[in-house]
Each structure stands twice: as structure tokens, then as C-alpha cells.
Amino acid sequence: MQWFGPELGSLLREFRRNTNGRKWHVDHTELKIDGRTCYYYRCFDKEGNLVDVMLSDNKNKETAQAFFYQCHDTAGFEPDMITSDKEAAFEYGVTE
Image 1 (tube, helix red, strand yellow):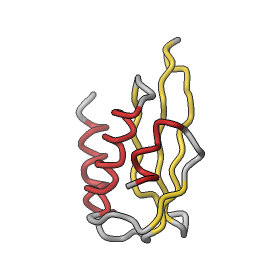
Image 2 (tube, helix red, strand yellow):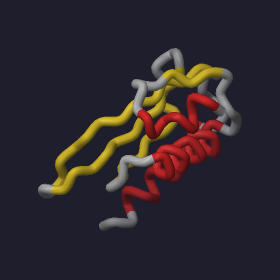
Image 3 (cartoon, one colour):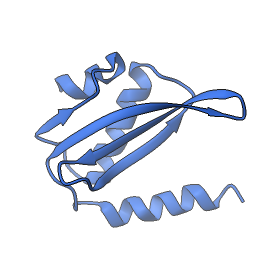
């Protein structure tokens, strides 16, 4: 049932809209899924509330930019400050 995950994710994003703080922390984790390397991006606010997550096959600036756009869409606003784990791909979110 591949429809269950995306549908549940959409419902949870709607639930989290406009409930996050204005200071975000982002990072990524490298995972092995069925022998493939995947990247799990996550974003939390200062209080530890989830803003959004994304699983991707790529770790590059375009993927990080798409993740930040997704976070902005989920939260309903742009944060005042973003703290990252100094990953080069996060340059977009940290400088904007």
C-alpha cells in the first residue's frame, strides 16, 4: 500500500501548519535501505517540534532547496533563523 505513506504525510503536514516556532534546526542522516544509500532530511523548531522530514536518493543543493521549500510550505512561513549541521548542501537555507 504505497498510497498510505504519502497520504498520511499530507494529513500530518496540514496538522502541523502554523504550529512551529521561528527558529529551526536542520540536519541529514545517511541511511542504507535495501543496499542503497538514502538521505533522511529533518527539520525541528527550537522547542523540538517537527517541522518536516524528507527521504531522498540525492544529497545536493537542489534536494536541500526542495526540502526547505517543503518546510516553508508546511510551516506556512519562513523562519527567522536556521541552524544546520554545516552540510554544504544546506547553504541555501542558511543564507536566505
